[in-house]
Image (cartoon, rainbow, N blue to C red; front, side):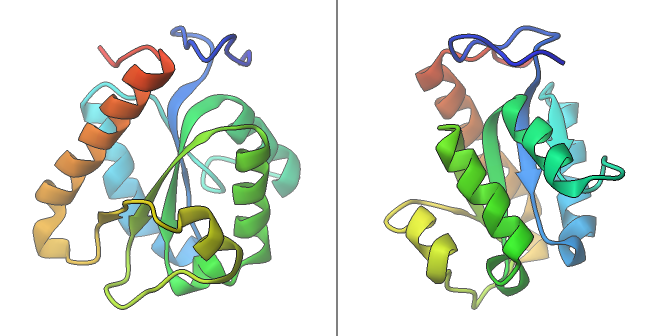
Length: 153
């Protein structure tokens, strides 16, 4: 896939959303991915759809997306690979939407600096999944409008 130009995304240029997560969160991340795709978003899940050289694959994923959704957990915050991916996303000026997967989790360190003062979508209560996914979709739509990205069909 080609990197999008001027923040605009065409059908062949990349993904609306990339989800960055630590491996233990795969089940909920795949549920989120499925729901977003059912709404027409092109979604890439970092680490899940890759083989081989992890850093090169992470860079390709980041380069070919408009928005990075970070699935925050304590293990994510303590993962050197997750933090590298997050930092690379910032360097590439990707829009970041944090989601919280653990109810008592408070981001600190590099992750805390990135999300400080920002809003996140709370996915920590499985019973509220539909409410949380609706809130995430609203944030994605709002972000795409701000950056001039193509809306899903």
